[in-house]
Image (cartoon, rainbow, N blue to C red):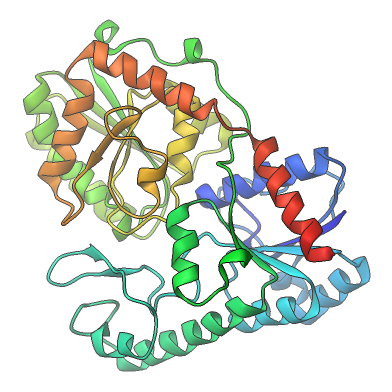
Length: 403
């Protein structure tokens, strides 16, 4: 099958792009012809989604212009187009009008005025409202975004356009039941919203993971993702003194990623480590797959402190492949892969607090035998899934769309 893949970034800037990189490899290995289209060329210091060794045509709208890319894609004659993470609404609509398009939802496209599905007053809380004109009334009082009325109106018009665009997609694919229900609540027919099996591409050997914590002096925590306010990195940093005090052992935190909050978080980390003996933090910036795997092998625990309702949370399943349990707030699609007390711990999310996060982390680390069991459970859970079963369902959707 000839499959065009359209996305916003040409490089890996988070879990969604890491997933797309694995998907391209697997689709090509299964005999499909692939063409790759991105809106933007790259992100500094990050690796490309499509490896240069692959014989796949790659076109960028940033380099060639939208019209030229559309012409090249049309000349290539895809049977189906898989779209993930579009940025420009009119661009997404032109793709949907021109080709049989399947949308792979990685965010709250067309279902939230700010795209975060989160209100920030009086506390930061996931929002369950169905998108519509009433969102304009709540935007300022509930702090859904900034305080500029022109920005509010621009965002509303954009998401209203995206909401209508949802009906033009031949099918919508999600990785969580949480997101499947979100689109159904917004009027997309239920038979056109398909939840895919979890995408696990390759399993690390559990024996290659870090040895039980009792063989090391310090606990190793890992944050892996975009450094954005709603990712909750500040809550994790503020929780470190409580964790160190409760466990009575050194605590080291690796923070890998990039984003607008990095400078602020680095300052906060300096404050915390300067007054807390035994607490250390290291920032790595964006890391490539080999470095990411190294950090996972060293980690005792992955922390996903997101305070917005994560549509899925790819990084948690990736960590589980390495036998690394996770702690996260119980938001969005996270509880679908994080089984509380089995593959990690869920912290209370109404509202998410530093104390709740610290307590959940300590519950995983306080007992070495319990931590070892969590590691085994996480690895065994991830081993139930495969990228092939994920792609097989996707191929069935493609065949149905083409038919």
